[in-house]
Length: 291
Image 1: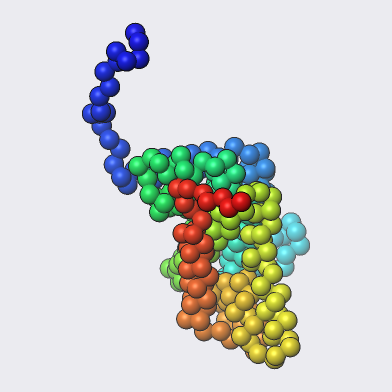
Image 2: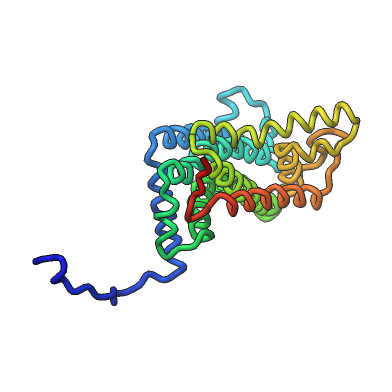
């Protein structure tokens, strides 16, 4: 049949709800993230610290195992807030590594292929596009942070000879809230800086640099000016301090250096707001080329 003889009519079928359209992007973002074998290798390697922590909990609660390795008493390994703090810090570095590799795959490929105009021509907003990618990034990091950490907490409560869980609920709350803050921060930082770099490898390096380079600058400022405010540029220090307080671990991360919780939240919020502004400026349905 000739083209001009076709009768075209508007689509009258079922329309996907607005809130569900974002999840389409999330589904494809998950598929893109795990399409790389390197993503799988990094994820499996990120489980090693969790296995070490699991073995530590088993060892602390099993007298026979302690005897086999030469442990003399039940206090050879204390399962307390400090123990879980070290485990959380280890998984947080794993989350940073995963973010530096996966986040660029979610946005950089769309930019390099000039796919944003096509994607945003569909019934989805710029916010929906970013939010769909954000959900995927947040979900991937959840699997390596707060979910296994809470499972380890539950295993410790099950393995302990005496009632343990009820007296240490602050640890569970701290693990959950601290992990959520970190992965929410990493997700927005990873997407924001990936949106401004079309080369995936460069974007991965920049994400690492955003977390580590300001820490070095802050150390220089602290050493030269003799002030503690240089630590406001040190994201690992601020997060370690926040985690320590959430879990109830006594002492300071750096002796003699105290930053209030409100100040830490203000800095994290300020950085996140800057990342949102970067995404707002970059994620457009058109690209202007000046020549």
